[in-house]
Length: 223
Image (cartoon, rainbow, N blue to C red; front, side):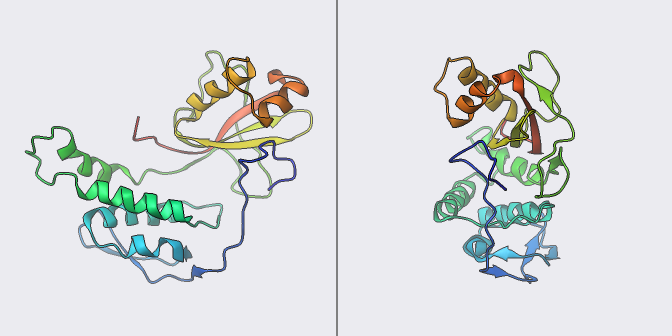
């Protein structure tokens, strides 16, 4: 994706993954009710230990993994690094210790598992053509935003900066795209350290020379 990506170290590189499970025969359980769903897409073997975990947390995180693959309209090669695998199992362990009894003395914790089970399967939003050949957001915003309303700006997801004169772009991800934009604006305004992205933009027409847009978003249930 990118000889012209403005992020020098945080780029999204799409690497072919050969070690995949083709036409996977895994069964996904829907909301823990025992309803099986045949999976026909490729799932990288790095997900196997999670998908084979039959604990309460393992089943929930497996549902999340299947849902992400269902929503992968760009056909990205999805895989977990060793850190991602460890983090996934840590998350499974945290889910497993949540109380099952709704009358638990731990207040909100006793409802958290039910909340996660009912809210993990939100739809991804695409503010761009579903293609890896180019990044062309359908809706872009001039900077600074000030009080403009932003579609899906507070969602978790992937966002981009596009330099209007050269077509160069920078891509990043955040739990809240809008909060991350404020972080970038503080760097542009000299209130935080600047990265390669900020320095390049300021040297090539300043912040008014770029547009910003969330491009792939997902409801942020954390917030």
